[in-house]
Amino acid sequence: MNDIFRRLREQTLENPGTATFSRRPALAPIEQTVDGWFCLQETGNVVHWSVATDETEPVVDAARKASLIGRMASQFPLATWFLPAGAAARVCRTCDGKGHVPGLPRELADKVACECGGLGWTAG
Ligand SMILES: [Zn+2]
Image 1 (cartoon, rainbow, N blue to C red):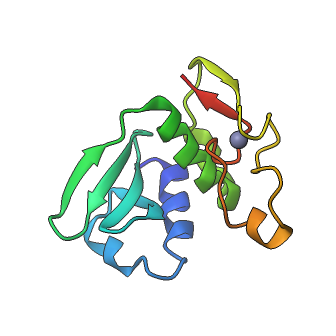
Image 2 (image 1 turned 180 degrees about the vertical axis):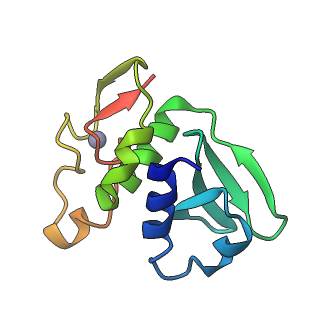
Image 3 (image 1 turned 60 degrees about the vertical axis):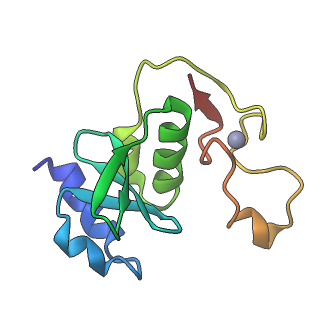
């Protein structure tokens, strides 16, 4: 297994609520959803894992994928290694490249992710 992915996964599993990932060793949690998790794979692909059905579905939208990895990288810098390279990108229209939603009070600004995931740019 890729050393960067292995260490990144170890770091993400230190977050509470991730014990269920012991049965999916090839997935690193990014963000919890109503019925599962967005997860990173060693290949750099992002999938949604439904915990109830144990099925994974790929996230194919390039902007959504980069945003999720960017959100992950804001807490775990190793995730930057998995950002798509060479993809078409533009400055995020919401934050104008600043990486956070403008106009939010400080306590919310750390919790509400911009559509770019904090990267300041969007893919696609
Ligand atoms: Zn943004």
